[in-house]
Image (cartoon, rainbow, N blue to C red; front, side):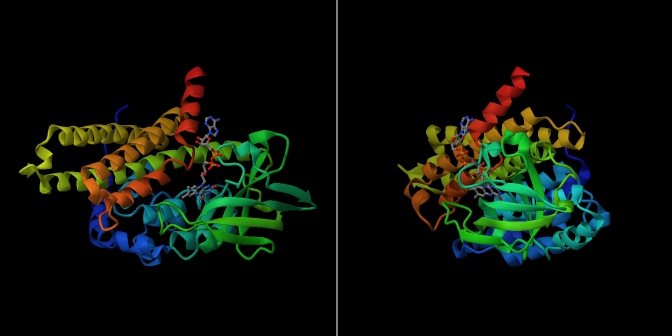
Length: 380
Ligand SMILES: Cc1cc2nc3c(=O)[nH]c(=O)nc-3n(C[C@H](O)[C@H](O)[C@H](O)COP(=O)(O)OP(=O)(O)OC[C@H]3O[C@@H](n4cnc5c(N)ncnc54)[C@H](O)[C@@H]3O)c2cc1C
């Protein structure tokens, strides 16, 4: 592997970093405490063209690659995980299926405005009784003439309260496990589609997450994504690998923020007549976090670079997510220790990093599921 950031990628990262320092870091705690979608910042990001960072210019995108998209996710997560989660969804899995499989009319009507922040897209796979085991989802898509009728309940759907269009996973073959899952484009306002109760969460308070209920939702067969039944599992496998890398990038951002605040606090806090950074026990914590951060960065950007080379590797993507998300949790845990009791106080950011780091453990495969994928790939 021969990977280093190009001048263009480095420049873009610096521009996003500057935006995050000026616009996000100062308000991150406030938007979290409001527990509302950070609409103003989201619109600023849309105006900068970053929602379309990985899409072609012909649809209003910036024509960037996976590395560039992940650099943006990393920097945003350094400032606010809630904002980063909303943007990451819109710029990848919320819109990707319309881009890849939508008709030209759907792309003009949904994707183009979505990249401008005028419409919101999301993906709905998880159900109350099935998350890791997507082959066990109960949402059904049944043929009815030249339509499908969808019935089921989705859970934990990011941005659902705001969404104008949903990529919905449903079973076309109920007894075929994961192979029986297909994906459907369903738009807001379709009779029978309802967004249910918002879920109160431990972290990412300003990223809205809700239940979605489908009761006899009729969609034309043209809204089966991929054009034919039986393609959903393969499409999901691809996007899940990309979501894993993105979650790794979010994890790097949070780890950097936790390390920076821990280092600063350790230099300022006096105990036994000296700054606590002079104690070897504290130095070792910082050294360990910094070492794991570098290792996580190498894995995540190797995975993203491979995607850009057309060599997406499910094992490396799972390793990147596993290692980086566990590193973020390690870093946030150590931060709350280095801060002593102030790590437990709502007026410091250490507690927010600790709560938001948990979010990174679940989406696109828990640590256990990532280990399963790595082991399966090893045994191949
Ligand atoms: C804030 C947030 C936002 C989310 N946004 C979305 C979204 O927008 N769209 C969406 O579709 N989903 C979303 N999710 C859902 C998320 O992807 C799922 O929660 C996740 O896949 C885990 O599923 P589960 O919660 O049902 O856990 P389960 O699958 O029930 O797992 C429970 C436990 O069992 C373990 N386990 C399960 N199977 C195995 C196995 N084979 N081997 C070993 N251990 C196993 C798991 O690792 C876990 O520890 C979101 C979740 C959160 C927290």
